Length: 147
Length: 133
Image (cartoon, rainbow over all chains, first blue to last red):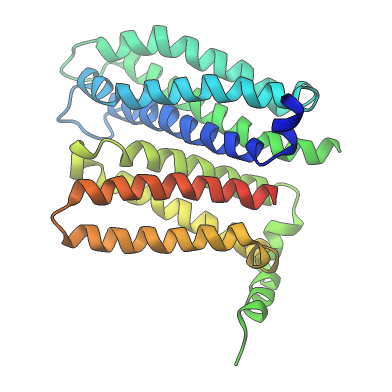
């Protein structure tokens, strides 16, 4: 099965779904981060923005958690040797961990103005999630380098 | 009359195109910005009910996607022009533009948004196709 996915059009097709999932997940989280930084949507409370976006965020997370392991399983030996992949997994774990702890608490703080703590968390979240996307993109670049 | 293929040759040999294609980090960096901007644009385009407040952010994302896309194309114009999936992707972008124009004039806003989402998903598939085939 793994060999079949790797050799066929299924691989780029699953990758496409993976990228769409990552765009939903990261795109919506970044929007909440920008709100916490006070850069957009000031008329909406961060928590109501987060719940309005939650279906997209959850769908994105579900998609990457299904397609990611499929891609990994289809080409194990390639990924374990790829430094960008290893970095991506470390960053993804950190970003996801921060999302369900620090980020969630920061968004739920009801305040008139955003506190410094909320801004620091938002910035951290922005950096972590952008780095996940960048590391993912870099996987292909590091294949060529190692070949 | 100059052909599109010749135009691609010219574009590819321009200094900026060569700066990207001949440097080690040029292509990966422009490619990285292209993808990050796409993600930012997706985030700003999805919550349609929040409407106009996000317009500047959507425009910023889209401008970055388009300008970095143009740079990536310029760095290897002839090669891209030959690829079937590149042509499909460009066709889909034309459809997206037409859909946006039609959507701004019609009452069926929801329908045009649904069409745009399907077309964007197809653009991602075509983009992966360029890398693979």
